[in-house]
Image (tube, rainbow over all chains, first blue to last red):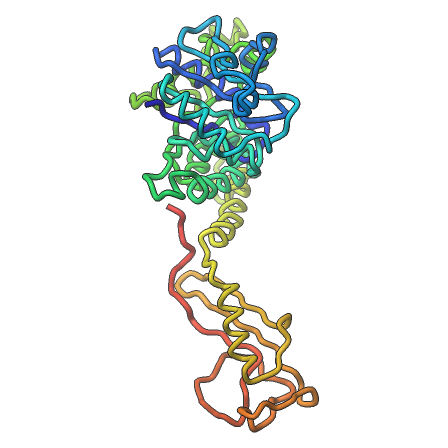
Length: 271
Length: 132
């Protein structure tokens, strides 16, 4: 029976799609059969980030409406075994996501896959609610910045009130924080909230800290999940986070300023 | 770091201010979220009881819950009509003071005067509730 993970944040532009793509790829790299679903109906982008935009024929909404079979809409990743993408519709709107339709598709996917990663749209409206409603695990993507932290808190409230697990009195959705775009240098200068500050405010366990990294833009430019750029800090941080998600004890990296040695300073190399 | 900076109190960095602002605003919002949803019903029922005795305007009733550190207050503000507008119901013999007193509800059961504009009483002693 597959587990449903929702990547959510409330606020837009904090890295949900980047993180969904990276995380799903990371789980597949570990040998788990994984599908990543775009819930951002009308504003689909997961296909671009995953680099499969030209292979989309049918989508999530087609499957919900019975216009296509699930297997026709699922796109198999060409780089990583066990990884599938379920893109969403670019022309419909969020009303196309019915609770019954979403439940039916997720149930079907749960039979076949180990992990189903739901990439939530921003906001707390229908699309976001549908993406988190059936979740077993929630990964809260947050930037160390006031509006993002506040919105994350709001979405935590929604998770603990409006998810299926909450409504049916089941064991609550597990909640973990993924702090993205973290810049240790600015933290050191007192210009950015510390990891510990955000943890104290949100009071949920830390899954990982993804450092601000140029590799993220480079990866999305070419339609590659950044986790496949194993030389980048961000890619390594995502690999670590996947390990932690799977219960491994991985020490946090990239949370402090990397002191550059004389040699690397002379060579002017940067990560 | 110079020796002088030891004596000066360090100015708050913007990150520290961000944290403090977040803590304040979110304490507020979490209360609203976990807060009681009985207030609208309470307001209606209070209104119904008072309306049995006094002719009141439903729009002039305010029910507010303030959560403090050790004690929370439930504040009920009901504006009663002035003396001239009153059609005294049979249950109430004497007139309502036209300028009602502002203050805490008194326990005295003086049937001469219908209290009161503002009543406040301690409701619970829950502090700002933490979600988890």
